[in-house]
Length: 163
Image 1 (cartoon, rainbow, N blue to C red):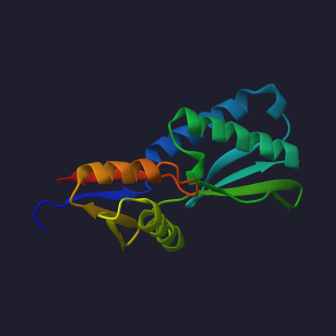
Image 2: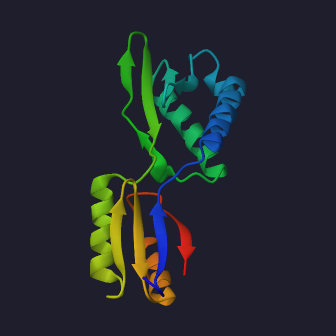
Image 3: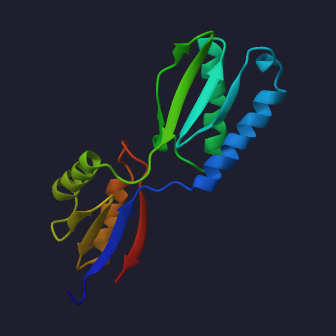
């Protein structure tokens, strides 16, 4: 494989930045006047993020606060997998999770995009929750990166660019 250049396509999220965004959201919810007396809160529940409030519109406001904090911290909302608000006793709840890694079906879609749109010298293979892309030409790999930056279904990063 002499002369081959490679890079990996991954989807990773900095857990510390998510925790920081969550703590900032907690502080803002505790201080804002429109959240007083509505039982609004946000917290980790194992791997998930649990939001609670006494009405559906208040819980969506909590979600909006959390999303704005994620954006300020540089975390793409493509990484946020949010559920629907559901009633639970006297309150409404909403569960969200952070997507890590590239799911198998999305990896196959990315593979197909590379086969269809990228230069013919570019090859890709799925390796667990990431994709390895190889080619003899660095320019072809950079063109492939530009094609994949337009991919809407996942937050993709490109790492380990090697010659």
